[in-house]
Image 1 (cartoon, rainbow, N blue to C red):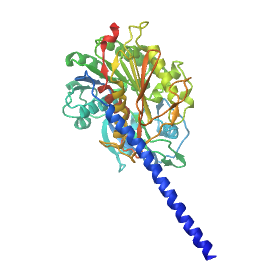
Image 2 (image 1 turned 90 degrees about the horizontal axis):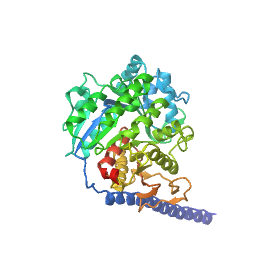
Image 3 (image 1 turned 60 degrees about the vertical axis):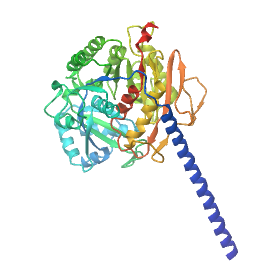
Image 4 (image 1 turned 30 degrees about the horizontal axis):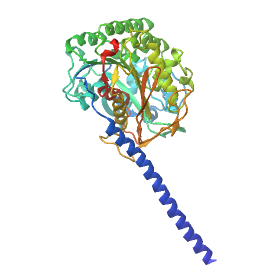
Amino acid sequence: MWTKTIGFGITSIILAYIYGKWHNLQLQSLDEKEQNIIESWNDLIIEPKRKFRRISVGINCNLDLIVSGTDLLTALGQSPGESLDSVSLEDIDDLRNTFTHYFKKGAAAERTFTDERKYKQIIEVAEKLPSKQHYIGGNAALMAAKVAELFPNTKIQLIGPIGPLLKSLLPRTMSIPENSHIPSDEVHLIMEYELNENWEGLTSPVANRFITSYDESNSKLTSLNKFFSGLTHFDSDLILLSGLHLLETQGSALIREKIAEVKEGLQKIPKNVPVHLELASMASEELVQAILDQVLPGVTSLGLNEQELSFSAHVADGPHFDDFHTRTGQPEIHKISDMILWILKTYGYSKENPSSRLTRVHFHSLTYHIVGTLPSAWHNTQSAVAAGTRMAGRQACDVNKLSPPDIELRIPGTFKLFSGQDDYTFDENNPVFSWEREGFYFVFSPVLVCISPLKTVGLGDAISATGLMYSDFDISYRNS
C-alpha cells in the first residue's frame, strides 16, 4: 500500500515537472515569435527619401474625458440594456443600449448626443469618477500631437476649435491660428472597457472604447472655412483632414452644404500636395454615401477601421456588404483586402478616372493592418506599415519599446489574402509582406496586441499619422 502511494506521488511529481517544462517552453516559443516580429519591424523601418516638412491638420479638436464605460453607467444607475445601435443618442437609455451593443461586439464606435442638458448631466457624473483622465481629443489634434512627438523638426499647423485646457495639453511648438481659439473646451466622453471585462453577465471580446459627445463646433464643422483658407498661408506639403463623421447628427441640408464645401476646398489644393482623410465611426448612410461619392476622389489617402470600411461597403453595395451586420470579433483578412481593392478601383485614380487623386487606403484594426496603394504614387510602404503596427502596440501599452509578455500575436496561423486565394501560412520571421492585385500593391502586418492596454483612445490617429510620415509620395504617377 505504502509502495503504491509513494510510487503514485513520485509519478505525479515527474509528470508535473514535465508539464512545467513543456509549458515554459511553450511560453518561451510564443515570446520568441513576438520578439522575432519586433526585430523584423526594427530592421524594416527606414525613413523615406522625401520627407514631409510642413503639415496642416484639421479640423476636429476637443478635450477628451476618459472613464471606464461600465463604471460610468453603474454610477448613473444603469445595467446592460438591449443591444441596439442608435444613429444618435437622445437620453441615457440610448447611451446604455448602444454601449451594450458595441461592448458585446468589442467594436469601436462613436455616437453624438442630441440633448445638451442631458449630456452635461452625464459629464458631471463622469467628472466625479476617481479614475477619470483628461487628454487631447479629436482626430485632428491627436494626429498633430503624434507627428509633433515623433518628428519634432516638422512644422505643424493645427486648425480647429481649441479651448483653453486643450491648448495647455498641446505641444507648444505647434502653430495654432488665433481664429482657432474658443472660450471653453468642447468635451467628448470616452467610455473604455478592457479585454474580457465582465459587466453584469456580459463579457467584452476585446479592449475598446465607445465615444459620445454634444459638440456644436465640431458637429457643424464651424472651422471648415478657416481650415481651407489657412492652407494658402502655410505652404503645406501634407494635409491631414478629419471630423466629417461628426456631421451625421445634422440635417440633410447642412450635410449637403458642408460636403459641398469640403469638395470645393479640396479641388483648390494642388495635386502635388497629398491630402489624407481619416474617417471615424458613422451610422448615417446618407453621410457615408456623400463622403464616398464627393470627398474620396478629392483626397489622396484614406485611413479607416473595420467599422468604417464594412459600413462603406454596406452602403455602396461593395463586396461583403452584409458583413457589417453579421461580423463579430476581428474581421477576416481576405474580406478586408477585397473591400480595400473595391475602394481603390471604384473611387481611386486610374486612366479611366484621372480626375480622382485617391491612391492609398490604410486599414487598421486591433490585430492587423493592410495598406493598399497605387505603387507608382507611394513608396516605402513596407516601412510605413511596419511603423504603424509597431506604434499601435506602443501606444496601447503606453511604452517606448515593446517586449513580451506584455503583447501577443492574435492573427490566425493561416488565412487567405483575398477571396479565391489558397491559404497563406504566416511566418513571424517575415511579418510584413506584400502582394499585387489588379495593378494595386498591398502590404500586410500583424499588430502585437497589448494584453493590458492603457491607451485605446487615438490609436487609429497615431497609426495613420505614423504610417504617413514613413510614406514617400511621388506625384509623377500622373505622368506615367
